[in-house]
Length: 188
Length: 324
Image (cartoon, rainbow over all chains, first blue to last red; front, side, top):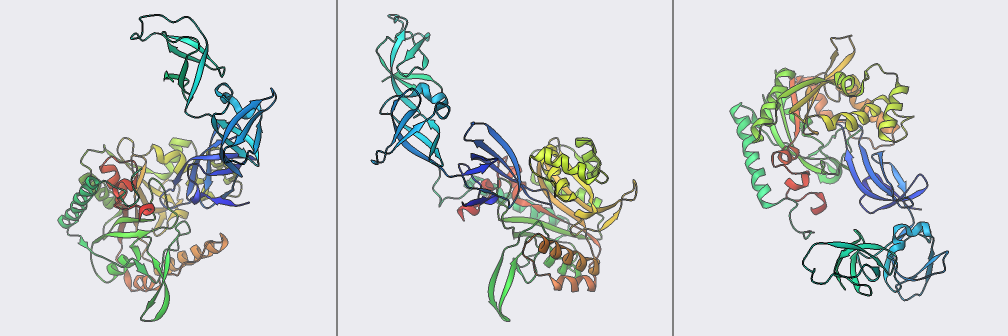
């Protein structure tokens, strides 16, 4: 397996640290006036999402992590596993465990394309698109004539997520939601 | 993202940089310090274990030979001093392999000057004056600290006497890495760069002096007033957490200099680093007699960065290495 030296570290590089695949978030070269140089590195552990701050002596290296980020379409779940299919025409399918889905579980919708992170061919993370269109399955009745006011109410969406929506939104409407903040963007 | 043919710095920043270069030149003209230009290439390079030199091969009048890109114009400038130049300064292009980051660029501009007959304390004062003449805003008062006192104040340890085992533990804890095989200076370097440097120069210009004798580089050594511990007659200048300058009461003893060169190369072999050709002409210049005095090297790009309130040196360079 290839390895990367500290001077090759840059944002997005995937390396192994303490047995877990990590992505480098930030790399700062520090050197006291005349002495040993160090790299202060922030890494996100791809298994836990936690950010680590570590110092390396400049010139040290870390093993590369066999991590791929691929575009995949969500297919279905059998209750145990969630299935995704490569978007490149190969029809290759990858099962994901609940742990790998994390918060993305509430943003799943069939036929939508997700970014799936594979480590040694296993799914370790699934990222939803920034915006997704979902139907309102449950919300209090709309309030007529209140379109200009800023009030909001909770609405349950077809994927299971709950978002704050304007008072005029009704059940059955399709909405555009920002998955990063969970906020309502507009009617789809 | 800007297209990669474009400059790293804005044209406005380059205009400011040009104005600051002119200010530096007039600062030294007023003080009767001669501007010199010395070669970027040399037959010898810096043996400093923690500096990685670039080199190249060139066909010269003696045939094909290896030449070293200078990590500082020090050796050539000292040869001018030995030849009787009197006080000199230079805005030199220097090269350090692998130094890449917000505060570093492989190729950069060093403002280096030498003051024969001037005591180290007086040179510290002159560095402070130069910084003030370049910055338009007042950076705050200038304060002096002994290296030892900074460790006592910020970490509650004596860097000269704390047992190595305890020093390694502390460095490992602060850095989150294995320091069990580390040398004393490596531990001190980690603590200095991680725990102390970021706090320096926040209220003004901080000058650190009396470094451990093992970190003398090309400075004279003398004995600490407190308990006779040998220390290096060397100082560093910090502003806003940035190391700006490194100064020495210059080593003038040719024999001692030859020993330090060969110790450096010995250490390089131990660490598996390439050896660097020793500058024999510098040694001969020292034998002929280098006037005693002090000298300092200041990272000009960092000073411009601070003067313009930028966050990285690339913001004040026409084309930083990734764009060159």
